[in-house]
Image 1 (cartoon, helix red, strand yellow):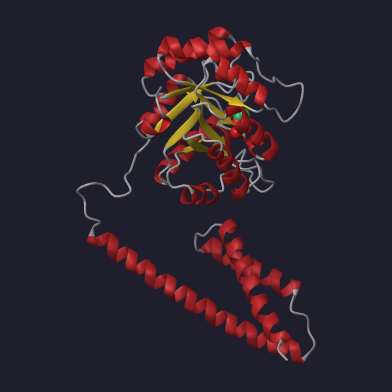
Image 2 (image 1 turned 45 degrees about the horizontal axis):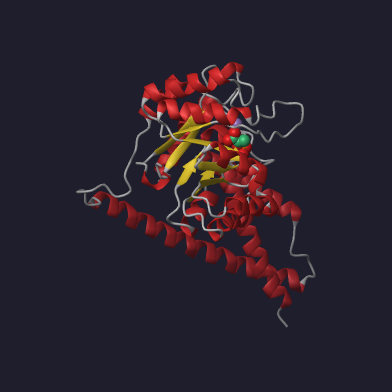
Length: 353
Ligand code: PEP
Ligand code: MN
């Protein structure tokens, strides 16, 4: 059995969103085998769909198709389980790798049920992030599998549901998977650009970004006829496009062997340190002025929050940001943080006896 942690990086997982027919599964597997880039073959058998009456997976019969495709090509296979019954059927069919979907990771009862059903098996588990951006739910799900003795537990980052993100189907919120990796440094972190982007044209850029953030692998939905796929048609790529994506990735090293971090880089880094120190000093100065304003407001019985003034600051600085090539998203977040800290300083002045 190929252990996930023994596969050389980047680990490539590919295959259709859903197993649809026996032919589709075997043809995809053969094309992926011929391309020689894929380490693990994926296909969903039971599909957790947001709305009923869409294709909810081919069911049990598909397990055999996937197992046979694995035997014929020699590529290890993986599928999604969402309850104890799925686990039982997968173990019986001979699966040694399973993934937990984003809609399951949110539910500790479901995760525990699956973990209990896996106790004593030597199955490897990949846990997708929960659909909501909650790092602890993701950590908790991983812990439930570790607690029943599963040794190989890894993570898949597929992005988070968000009312804010218009660019992507699921907002990547890169800081969350990176925090997960800091919490579990030994885990393999796989990026799923298909479900993040929801659009095959954007997959390469997200996959490249994942590589530059030192991810351990990629899961990319691949279909012999993406346009006519029964689920997630917009985001699947053909086996040939998959090869092209992988061939075009630039795999950079964190610290390339034999190369000293050059003097240029350390000079640039010390410049960054100086600018950061300067920024902190400026922010502290700004808070001192905010405290003086707090004192004035206290003496004149004026509220701390002044919505009109706050709107004026935001408008001014968002224009300024645009002129200076900073994103509105970043500057809004920055201003929000500054405003919170400013309110904290003014409240302290206001409440001082
Ligand atoms: C899938 O991988 O096909 C899937 C259902 O993904 P997610 O759980 O990320 O929505
Ligand atoms: Mn899918």
